[in-house]
Image (cartoon, rainbow, N blue to C red; front, side):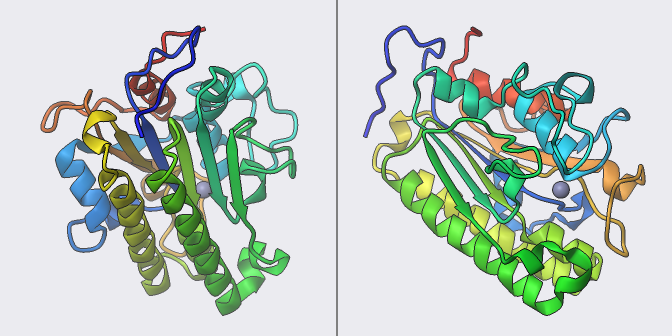
Length: 288
Ligand SMILES: [Zn+2]
């Protein structure tokens, strides 16, 4: 299917964009053996550390808000994982902007409610033409008590959202998509940055590979000018957890490839607030 832009759209339609957000993956975990899908995307385009800036608490809420809106905490007003009091109406996320421009969009979120649902001050992503959410049981949202059952529940939720998103990407192909996987961050909180965390990161990388393959195997892929981005929000301490300014926590990262990204050159992103502008430019955004 070749997408046709609605007339009068502020997006002139440079191409499709898929952003995969994988929560809480340390930069030093990435490698050709440990995360081959992310590594391969880096080889095709770029893979770079993206530090969390000094005004941003290293919590999921503020980091994802900066990634999604292209403005920092002084703009969007999200300072923690309860988003209440945010100013996202003044600084909409890239999925919402594309949706308002009349484009088909996909928001597919695993596990963490405020990204996609009206809970804890959410949703961070306000508008999407297709919205998918796979829940984990309430008990599995509690890092310190969920234990093995939590690891299984988050893995199941990530697997389910990957299945739904790959089917949608292979079929109707939304113009701008955001897919979120949360199991790695849960594993870090629950067990520290050890073997369970690495296992979760390997599973997430395999899911990233399936999502990218769903796009690349589209019959019309060559004509659709896809830009694909994988991004994390923050790292983790060795013992698990984040929120401070330790290098293993503040060193987030992004990888991406697409028609506007030349491999082997300077990464197009060095800050979290540069991701949304890159996404919108790839989709053909002219402002508005
Ligand atoms: Zn996070």
